[in-house]
Length: 434
Image (cartoon, rainbow, N blue to C red; front, side, top):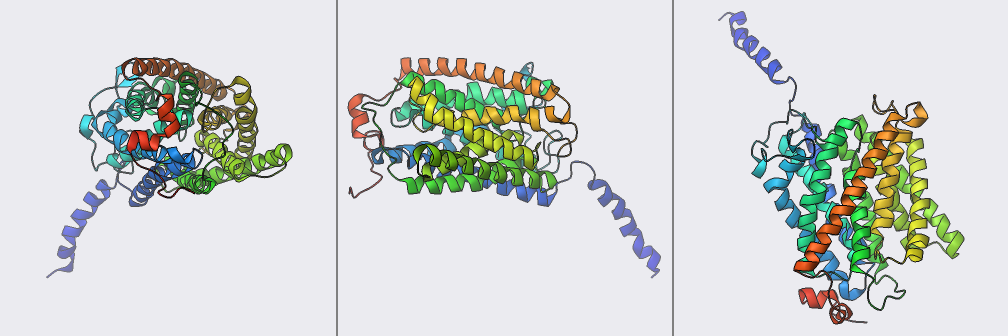
């Protein structure tokens, strides 16, 4: 048989294959990286955040903290796939750039093919589940504000309402292609505004409204070993949080990975030095807290700044968060039990504003901070942060008041004294009491 005739079928197939590799083709490397990053972000909530927070409370409340983190994963995951993702990320809005519509409800149309607007080299479903883990951890961060005081039933009601009324709209504003803050030109690479500012401001509101813990006195964390392990796990998971937000295995992911580690390291060292200067001893708790401050602050900036910007953001966040946690909280007298506002909220604000100052056009062209000669991005960041702070504050107050009216938010004094492990879950974290 003529060899040229044998080649004819292959010649016909080659153009078809070439056509199939056009735009919006799945890249297996990118998909693998985002799936791994999804698991890393999930790991940040359970067990990392649970251990970090759990080690800081009294031993009679450790299971309650772990339970809240664990159930946040389950509850928010279901709400997200049913309707949350559609309301947050749909390309069109029910109300002009404010909230999405129901076109992707129950993940209708969210399948193995890439989206035409989000992460066009990975399956749409991969992008969806990656974003689900951000939705999970955000309300879980607020646990630190009301630790040891909130009814579990009220906790479930609170995070459900807060998810729909705060997290979902703000996500749409900032990350949806139809969001009004996105159209304004505000940026948030991995959640400084969407995650840390919203959770931080909500934490401050709830801490003030729920009131101080009964018989509040200086009580050391019951298990700093848990806290240190949790902090290390959070640092590890944060690479998925920030580098994963590049949505591909590429140079942008590498930059985000490097500056995340750099900011956390700088913030840790600064907090260590402050501890040594003012408390005469370097502490594990201070070092862990500094690391989280550095991680929170670099989150919105990780895809826009280089090493220099990361070091400055990390150092400033550690200084300011230390001041808020050690001095301001004590002066004002609010009981943000685990410093969710002082670290996550303040760190998120610093990093979000820092983007407007340190954004380096060599990292992503088109994004130029103040030190590179353009102040427009800085103005946009101030506007976005201000709007989100005011909205989160107002809506969280309303949610709290309604739930308190319907269910009662706070446990009574006797329940608090016994501990939430036994009173809310009929379990103990430790079977042997030393």
